[in-house]
Structures are given as structure tokens and as C-alpha cells.
Length: 315
Image 1 (cartoon, rainbow, N blue to C red):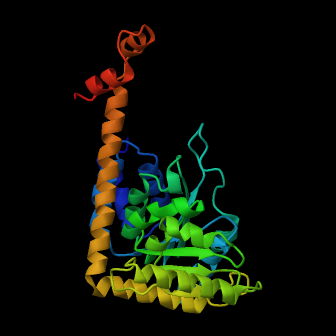
Image 2 (tube, rainbow, N blue to C red):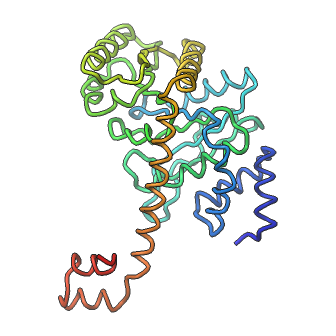
Image 3 (spheres, helix red, strand yellow):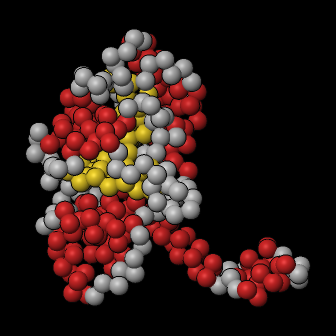
């Protein structure tokens, strides 16, 4: 466990944006080290200062390639960008399978870009309970944009809306079942819809189909915060449409800052973080109370999991 002076040095290093300090602080928070609570308390006052951008969509839609293009777009404007790439995790070790993604490695040597993989730890949609702590570290380090690239499970990714300020949902031409997927919740969480791979045939029809589906959603009351969700086309291969996408992301950030929607969304993020923290604490505390005596009682059928579980929880 880090001593108080060491934590102070680490926090000061993060405040200066020192990459080594940011990396060490992220590891301590993500790994839930004994001083992670103290670090989060230190970094939390900077929460809400950066735009958190969730990028989701099915596998093969080019999320990492478009992320790389957006990073280049913002770096040309002098903005610092942090990337949290959520990857499938090993059920044995809990570590990320894919590691830092190859398509965004071209920015690895840029001191204004920080890339870290996060293990999904089996969470549906890939957003684990430690992601908020990781975000607080990057906010305290002065990053202007924080990209959260999800694991890419399609319609199960609605959890990203509880973490991000702006959610980008990616699809590609000829993905015929996407409209059905949108009906399962994606339509409600996307702030911008992107048809990527605009260099492929069928782009106009895909944009038209998405626009029509969103129009039906608005007619049904799906959009309620005053933001009219755009449908854009991009090509991460050629860079086509990335400038327009960058402007649309900025427009949504201004919308959140200038309307009640931003404060409302921030409250929901804090509610989710608090909920995950409390449930995690209760879960760990209960598991720590399971003893060999309890397991023997179950094996001998002297009690049952429901009765014993309620007893351990003090119910």
C-alpha cells in the first residue's frame, strides 16, 4: 500500500499530466489497490471537465479506425485525448484479451494521447465498475476528450449511456438487421449515428434507412432532451466525413453545457458510479463472510442457499 507522501506525489504527477504518474494511478484504480479509494477522492473534484465520448457498435464497423481518425482531428487542434478501450477479459485472470488496439497505436508516442485497455470483467456491454475511477484519473490529468471504445457487442451496449456524455453508434452499409437492433434500446442511447465505411456501395440507402428509423423514434417520443440526433457518414479508411463528425461531437458537447440535459446526464453518471460502488462493497463484504462451516451445512443439506444467503446479508 502506498504511503500518504507517495500518494501525494502520485496525485501531483497526475495533475501535471505526467504519463508515468497517469499510468500508475490508472493501474492502482483499475486493480482496486488498497489506496484506490483515496486516489479517487483526490481526483473526483475535476469530474465533469472533459467530454466523455462512448463509441459503440457491432464488431467490424471500424470503431478503432474511426477512433484513430478522431484522435488525429483533435490533436491538430491542440486537444489532449485519453482512450479507454474496453476489451473482452479472460475468465481466469480477468485481464484484457486484446490489449492496446493496433489501429490506435499510431498515437502511442504522442504525449498528448494516453491509451489504456480495460478488461470488461464479464460485464454485459463491457463497462466494468472501475471505469469511473479511470475516467477521474484522466480528467485530473487534464485530458479534454476521453474516448471509451466498447467491446462491440451490438444491442447489449446500452450501459455506455450511463458513463458517456456523448454516445456514437457505428454501423456500416448492408448490415440489414441494424434497424431491428435499434429497436432493442440502441435508438434511445445514440447521440450521433454513424454509417462508417462510406467508401462501400450502399451508403446513401443506409443513411436514409437510419434517418427514417430515427424519425419514427422521435415521433414516438424517444428524443426528449432537445437534441435532434444526426446521421452522418464517414470513412475511417480515407478520412471522409471525420471533420463533420468532429463538429457534430462539439455541437453535442455545447448542447449539454448550455441546456439542463448536461446536468441531468452528469447526475445519472454519478448515480451509476455510486450504485456500482455500493453494490461492489456489499458483494465483497458478503463473500468474505462465507466460511467452511457454511459450505459444510449446504453439503449436508442442513440449510439452503436462500436461507443462508439472507442470513449472511443480515436479512
